[in-house]
Length: 120
Image 1 (cartoon, rainbow, N blue to C red):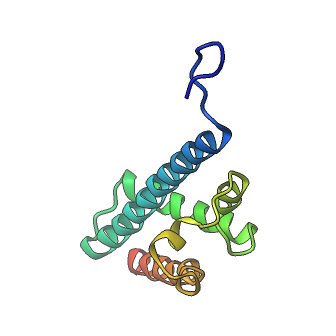
Image 2 (cartoon, helix red, strand yellow; image 1 turned 180 degrees about the horizontal axis):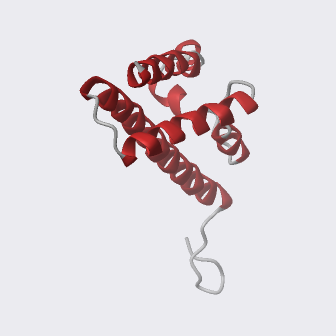
């Protein structure tokens, strides 16, 4: 839509929705990277192949859960979602809300088991 001077006008809602999409995309990318790291930890433990990626993956997973613990069990990016008017967190886009709330405890157990496989 053009304004009186012939300039294209993008309303605030469209800008916010673009930001929400960007936040969701970045958040999904980070979550995918975390899943890759978790998978690599299992791969390293099962095949007994320890590489620099094993160290990086372990550090990433431990850092992620330290951040989640400091944020009282929630992903800090959820606050970023809400700041821009997104009423759903990443996992709430994919899962029912009660199930989505259990994602971090579930992945904490899966991560702990992966680290145990790696150490064992």
